[in-house]
Length: 415
Image (tube, rainbow, N blue to C red; front, side, top):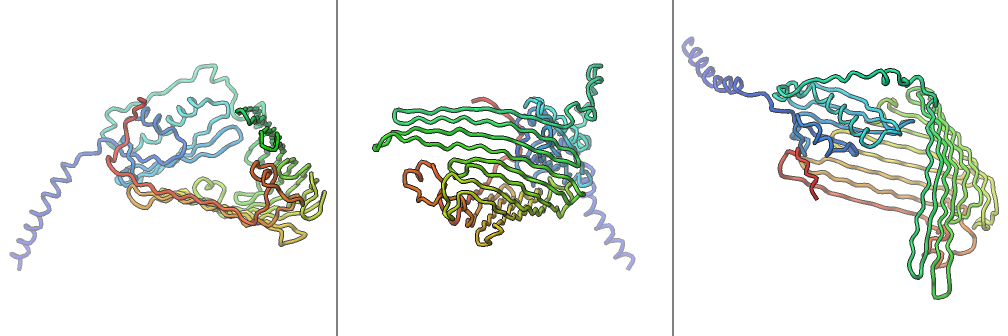
């Protein structure tokens, strides 16, 4: 019996010896493979500036999964960099935040983003042979930078202002169109308050030579939108919307609205970039003065509308799901209502294969501003007046399959 046990032990030892030798001879990684998942992160520039890693096209080949999301802040954008280790770096996980300013140039934004990506990849690279060519540099700020204002010493008190103006002109022998548009916005965002006000106008005119004579088309409009929100906790907020507007094509001489609202987030707002499920309810009383008598024989009226809005969104390594749902109705007649759903999916099925699907569908029963007079074919073709409809929809589908070399390190800007 002892002889059989001894022989079995020797056989097991002989079979395990090559595996042990192979494990001892296994060399460390030359460099970590990185899969970069982002929508606007200057991918070509990143590859030219960070060369101590390998960039792969497919997540299955990665040792590091880097997802970058961004969102508007009061004075710029906030980029959240999520570094997730894959075999053999399962224990490595880190998140960095990079905040830009509206006054930063595109070059300054991409340089700052690259610096944060580089710093986040260092913990992975030091566990590979790439460490042999890495070093650390520290830039000592000069005295002028030391004396610059800190974020707490903001002379503008978080207010951001923006002014824009634009124009365009198109002409041919029988047609002339021109457009002038512009706007002014003011915004202030803090941890507790969010204030946003903007005025926009559009002067849209067209002259067309028809067989019946010269046709002058007017599509002018202007609008003021105001918004105030206050944080009531890490999941709930209160807000107030306001609006003044005029629309030539919408048959609106003046529209005045004030809408108190309440919003609840099923996930903490701190997780907004990664997952969200938000419900928002608002009540909107409004006064409307119409350019022409409406289909309800109104020249002006005071109405109230309630709106329920839901947004579900997940951003994960396997893709993104984003669904918007809006339901509304007028309080004096619940049959005057609208329902809209807009789903969007971008899913990674397997190696190299991804599917995208998006669309929107609206059930429309609330066009109370439609003129009583029927729209002519000419007005319909030229977009002079709003058209009656009971529904509206759109859909798009995409399928992408990529194969070939797993690496994507080289950038060639020629041609």
